[in-house]
Image (cartoon, rainbow, N blue to C red; front, top):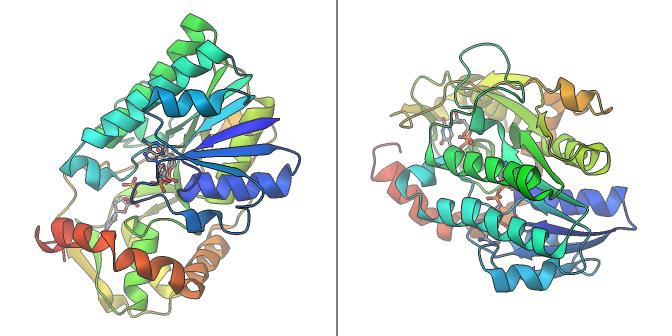
Length: 333
Ligand code: NAD
Ligand code: TYD
């Protein structure tokens, strides 16, 4: 089995590569990654000699055709992923998340693959005021990131329904774990807390997310790859519903930082106030989340404490411009 992992130098993609090396050492892995600000070759340290890494763009046919040839399966993680950045400028989201998915699907159709996993997200359902989203619920994305992912999600489905490409769609909830770019809630708050900097909570801190450890998400994706039905969608949620205030207290507690670092700042526009997934369809394939949330969060915080040489270059580099533009200049910091 030869698997193409797009976006494999990012947070979940790199965790999936490490996970596959551990769990399926016989698989050949090819990573295609453009190395945007969020892609980091250091994320593949330890496996770099065991995989093939190709720097390239999923939205370029030439780059994609060269790598898809010879691959049995594709897992498409490559995407622009930060909601706040999509609010500032959605251009790269449309290009990578939608057009990039199209290029991969069209190439898979032309060359033939056994399985194409499109990594979608629970954000495609939009805000869920109560209850839990099931796979047949309508998609109501409310921010440009979520909308671009919903476009790719349905485009992928159309390649199954129209062209018979064996597509499976995974809708995961908010992931946490090592190697997440420090623009996202958990790594931002841990690394700020380590430096004694304020941690900005949007609005009243009441937005609820369904947190899943990245290892559980990776196992869910492998379950879909090995046992999923083509043309099907599978939710993959951790079942750990927490609002931002609860998360912030948990993160700062694990980091042994004072709670007075927490600061309420103006809310994200179009902020989805609740996501929650019903993952029973994937559970019927034998998967279930295994990482205990408190323990997973403690280990994650410890990882950032132990790996300052991973995040300090990021926070003193590209991230600084983002912090200035989105937080300081717009009154959030
Ligand atoms: P990330 O931002 O950490 O990584 C994205 C990776 O994609 C980076 O390595 C980047 O260099 C690469 N990339 C971006 N544009 C590219 C292009 N045009 N061509 C090739 N590579 C490109 O993202 P992540 O958090 O690891 O998310 C991975 C996937 O999982 C995304 O599709 C995202 O929508 C989905 N997802 C994420 C979460 C979450 O909580 N992080 C939850 C559910 C689903
Ligand atoms: P984030 O990690 O950006 O993921 P997503 O928006 O894709 O769910 O944000 C998680 C939650 O944390 C979300 O409700 C927004 C909130 N948040 C803050 O309150 N402050 C911050 O600085 C960030 C980055 C997020």
